[in-house]
Image 1: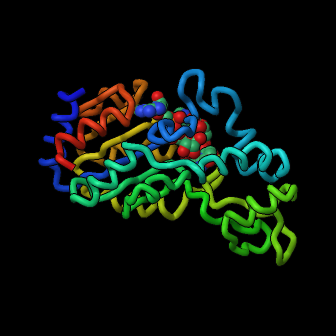
Image 2: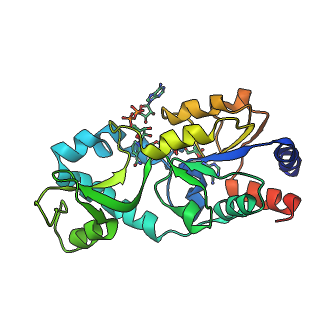
Length: 245
Ligand code: NAD
Ligand code: APR
């Protein structure tokens, strides 16, 4: 592992522009299960299209909220782990420009990262599907906890939806800003993503070189300059000591 961390540190030092791309795997050590890990991934048990898609929300909003909201409340109460914290420090010391994340748990921001592109949205706000009125996400949580399922708009009575990117949703504006940030990217450090979901899975092609830190192999491993099949926390522990941060 030290060997791989040393090679990564060397690639970072030679790179004129480095970004990180993270997925659900970076948050499992914060207690949030991922989607596709063998045996524990959420989509190993449930079909995402029937649980986390726009049509699921429209056809059965009660089931959509009963399935997703308890999980999302857990995300909001989770704490960043070593990997999140080291990435925030690496940005502070200018080793990376920032983090492109598929995660909606907000843990990179909580860890102190400043440039974070949340390409699948976030859990800070929600909006009315009828009149587009904006609410703090805590409004949906409060109504849910008061037994009002699905949460309703105070102005028009419409159903509230979270500002996450659901399956069948268009991609977020952060996704397009992340594509701009990837221009001239010389090194992309991919952490905790199976790189199976599009269009994010096409992003690695935009970087000149890639490092992949992922517990399980990905279809991009052969293209990576460096690959470590290990836990993100262990890897970033090593990298932090090598970078002296
Ligand atoms: P999608 O159609 O891109 O993907 C649906 C599923 O099909 C994915 O889980 C993926 O495993 C598979 N898939 C899609 N294209 C593939 C390909 N070319 N090769 C192999 N597998 C492929 O999802 P969508 O309906 O376009 O959703 C748009 C975005 O919303 C996706 O990027 C998805 O990651 C995201 N999303 C976010 C959340 C969330 O909670 N934030 C939940 C679900 C989906
Ligand atoms: N350290 C390193 N890798 C890990 C760890 C860990 N502690 N825990 C899990 N992993 C790896 C798993 O082996 C898996 O390959 O992280 C990867 C997580 O992949 P997914 O579960 O597919 O998560 P992600 O790639 O973020 O999924 C993309 O799918 O449902 C949609 O919108 C949702 O953003 C999500 C998107």
